[in-house]
Image (cartoon, rainbow, N blue to C red; front, side):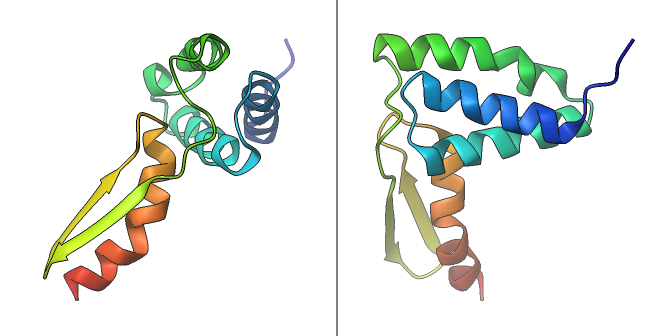
Length: 103
């Protein structure tokens, strides 16, 4: 049996998401998260969800082209509105602001 590499998991996931209507940068965030989940043995958060993501993108239930909005209203408090899109992109977009707020 041939081994499936993490690079192949990431690239195939990315291609599938883009093919189903996801913007390239957002697909990259999600594909990276799927790769990490598979690497860590967390199958339920890895490839298990890719088909569901694709179906939801295709149906319009999950938008693949929205930009999350970062709110830093108070010192030490950061909120990110994913706008019904992927949480992985919201995490990426809000990360630096959260790190700075923690300092």
